[in-house]
Image 1 (cartoon, rainbow, N blue to C red):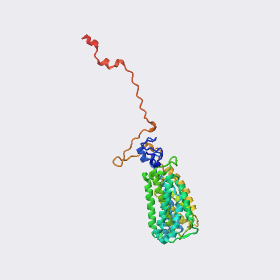
Image 2: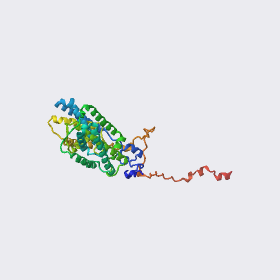
Image 3: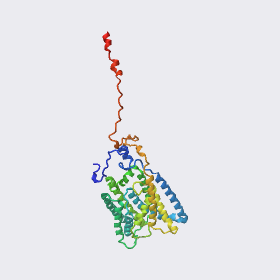
Image 4: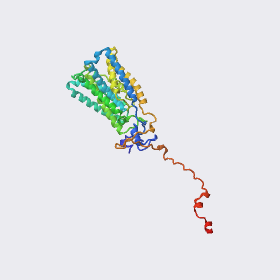
Length: 409
């Protein structure tokens, strides 16, 4: 029954069998990210700590350079505009990072953001709720359709979302000129609250992602062995929720960018925003393979890129989203290699099984290591050869009565 639930459970997955590592299945369920094929031990987070420290150093240095070039860029209205820009980019980075964590990258986040910005620009005079609400609802429905295609057909998320992005671009191309923003919403008035909210969501998401059970649950869609093999119903549901959430976050980011912009929205494809969003997510330490990621990395990477985009014009540099996104994406791929190399469990942890708790009083006890199934049935020890009997030392010669003694009596 374990391999036939809705036809979605991975073939050959039998949780009752003991793996060749010799660790009991109950232990593997708590130690491995995948009990059948996972690596024994806990993922190491030291690589994220070191990388996030380097991001902090880079952010401080770049902030100091911006302050030296133009101190007014970090004051009053300019600071509020910078914070809102960081939040808009941060929502796109969260959308990209969420889909990356589930190993189903959503490449439609950029076009969805531009489409939502165009809708807000046209309908903003009707009020914030009346203009943003329909955009979020349509984004959720589009994300649900994308999720159904990915998890029901079990196809790569990047391919399905690229097809979805093409459909959104068709909607965008119906406009041939820039659209003037009609609404009067000024996000700069609440820039501090918006940035604090984004920071809280990013950090809390990273903290939850460090928890072994949650990380394993969110990253369960990550391929193992044959990538076309289904990963189970739970993996499908989690991936579907992540794709819907990433699409909604992208729509909210587009609305915020439009409201904080220069007053008009240009109807372009938005794929440059996709490249930038994924570049920032990878730069923050989220693995391109899924599951692994840091705690403060997304917040620091978003802040670093936002400050750089404010610093570049001060130096006379004209850089598009394509240039910045391509650079961050290239560095982010190197970070992925570091994360996958130094973040995986240490080798040799198979011989040290993790404690298994039953949720009441047995926490801290360790399960004894069982014999590998490769050696079943177990080989019994060979008994020692019996020593040859000495007839002169038989008990009957020493303890039984002697007949000649009886006859003499």
